[in-house]
Length: 443
Ligand SMILES: Cc1cc2nc3c(=O)[nH]c(=O)nc-3n(C[C@H](O)[C@H](O)[C@H](O)COP(=O)(O)OP(=O)(O)OC[C@H]3O[C@@H](n4cnc5c(N)ncnc54)[C@H](O)[C@@H]3O)c2cc1C
Image 1 (spheres, rainbow, N blue to C red):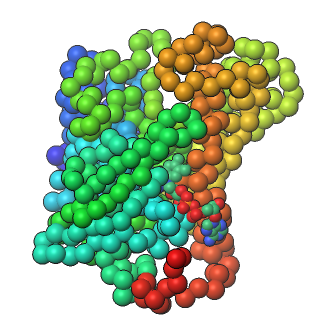
Image 2 (cartoon, rainbow, N blue to C red; image 1 turned 30 degrees about the vertical axis):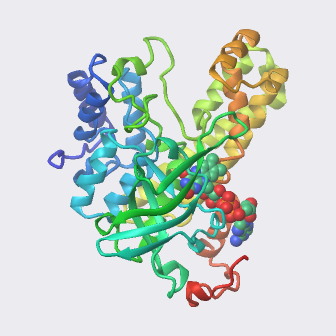
């Protein structure tokens, strides 16, 4: 454990401390698993987490900076995915120290990969209307239901499961957050292919699966509050362009089976761009404006004034996102908050993704009609266009419909800002007082 480490007080100290640590510890010839043990237990895999949860208690900007520094140094980044982005901070916030040591340790060291078992066919925006049931039976709970849109579910060892544990209270009050073992007969994960050609999503059928009482995070029937922590990290992480979810190219967990491979094989060769995976499937914020500018310069489109204008807009939006993050950080450091900022950041991210999509397709022109669905096709596409970024632009364009939906749709973000930040009246609704079992349901 690393809770004796004092958080660095300035960016310079952070840079020095991390560089020294990397010089002493990075070794491309050890395995991914061995490297992630070192990184995770040092606190540098998830420096945003508190020191009692395998982190260093840094703010988001410093944590993102540390992540960039690891990539620039040429070392493999932290285990990416929803474990680090969502499960770890949720468990660090609501879990007991025993649960932190059981679950968060395996996340920061990449031993286990996690997925988010929240959405259901009938419960997405209205997540609190979920119908997956968990029924107590001694020390275990028997779970039945269906989840959908489960990103990376096919390689997950564990799931952040929210299930209904009491139907006789209003819907927000009868939900519990469980850490669910995905390796059991009652869990059936089936892939859903997207128009990008990938099958990142899954549907998960849960039939008499078991979770233990010990695996409840934050208390029985308190799952809505715990889920809101998960969702807040999802919004702020996504609004910041992927945050700590963006890791190296290696995949955590037992199913991806990469822990035994050489760590150095997952990092860029000297002079190559750092290999970084982002959940949104495309270039993030400021980095994308630079990449698109270079591409436009390369094919002469930079002379087009409308493209120049939109590149400037994209750059400006990236800068605004950065300064909003800094404003939030300053407010938090002063013990205050900026209400609605996570929602505003996520809305801004949606706008940036749409602009990146349109701009990228305009820059590559006719190349935008060509997309590779497999690695083999990708090689042919690269050879045909002579542009190794063509496939990335079309992939990002096809995926651009996703970010404005996941983590709460744009419309839901606006509802939240309207109701909770601006104080506008809510839609008439009695679901806060009527027991879930008595609410009207679709047939
Ligand atoms: C790329 C991607 C990854 C995802 N990954 C995961 C994951 O790992 N785990 C997981 O649990 N879920 C995941 N999701 C699911 C995601 O959280 C849901 O898709 C989202 O919450 C919307 O729910 P829904 O699809 O059921 O749409 P619905 O809730 O049915 O909404 C349909 C439309 O109605 C609008 N709408 C609904 N209610 C209102 C309202 N009150 N006011 C105004 N407009 C409204 C919505 O904005 C939307 O346009 C993912 C989704 C995507 C696209």
